[in-house]
Amino acid sequence: QQPVQSPQAVILREGEDAVINCSSSKALYSVHWYRQKHGEAPVFLMILLKGGEQKGHEKISASFNEKKQQSSLYLTASQLSYSGTYFCGTAKLTGSARQLTFGSGTQLTVLP
Amino acid sequence: NAGVTQTPKFQVLKTGQSMTLQCAQDMNHNSMYWYRQDPGMGLRLIYYSASEGTTDKGEVPNGYNVSRLNKREFSLRLESAAPSQTSVYFCASSPGPSNQPQHFGDGTRLSIL
Image (tube, rainbow over all chains, first blue to last red; front, side, top):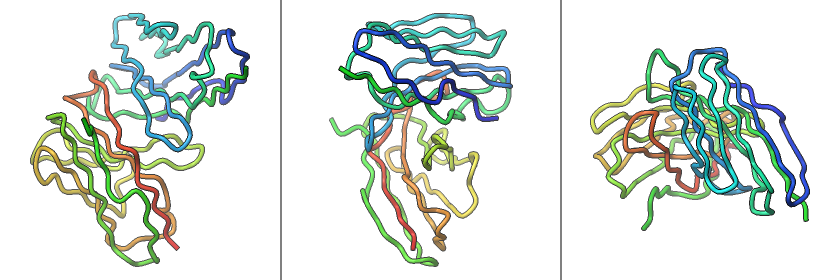
């Protein structure tokens, strides 16, 4: 039931773009994205609800395709501060709407 | 502006010892959560509390108990610690259900020998 994230790791140079994918085998109600730096707590980035919406925050945006049960996180013109591990968390359409199931993470490294 | 506060930050236990991890939030959130994070496995939900007075099992509840003491505080208890419970434990809170963001504490790093 854990969503599958890809890739597991990616290395970029400053200014390059990256896409992180999150796929689920279950129908989804919402998808959360969080970023965690080493030794720190996860920090909320954005939530996408069913309806195929796309959200953006500065140079980080995301989409949610509910038919495919997939979400993608887009990082454009990456900065050194974007380094960290990115997790998607999914809430199923049925069952408890309060439980998030997290993927195993994508480790993003941005080099100067 | 503390947010979510967890205590202690680090703890070493011996197998069979008991311990309670404390969590408090000052954002007037209704829902609170306990997760564990192991290398390469992301965050796994242990227990959650949708509102004061209610608690529910998450994905990995065995070996743990919780208490929602009041709206602010949600504690996690290990009755008889086992080496398999060595992990980083995160407490989180949110205003409500899964369409709202979760705010995490800094974590408790627990080692069981």
